[in-house]
Image (cartoon, rainbow, N blue to C red; front, side):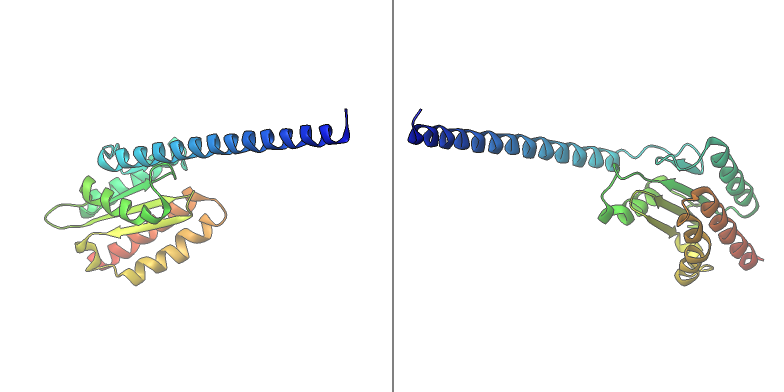
Length: 189
């Protein structure tokens, strides 16, 4: 084989390789695009068809053991019986919503589930996403009369975050929950 024949064969192989790489890249882009569309569709279906709460604690991210969920539910049940204030906890995995819409979803859940007595608007939703490293507390209008946004932020800072930083989600949630209850009880006397 002559030198020019080898060069020509090499060029042909390079062109074929380039087309092959481009085709593979195109297939990868199509697959990623399909995954993105499917995920967006899944998120929209979840938004439009929120599951009904099965208790005060709804752990879609599997942060808590069954025993821990039971304990959180019992704390909230006892408090609700004493005060009529309803507190719901929901954990939300990253498949359910984008990070930018996490707060919107928590408000949507609070409104859709109707947390709190309707005539008192005395509900609180604690929404947690380990995957996005976010937490949001939605206070009903009746709660904001006795618990300010600044106090809620302080509870997040002092009770939830120190535990969450150590990935102790149950301990942080329980600590924050107990502090919310303690503060509300002192104000309701």
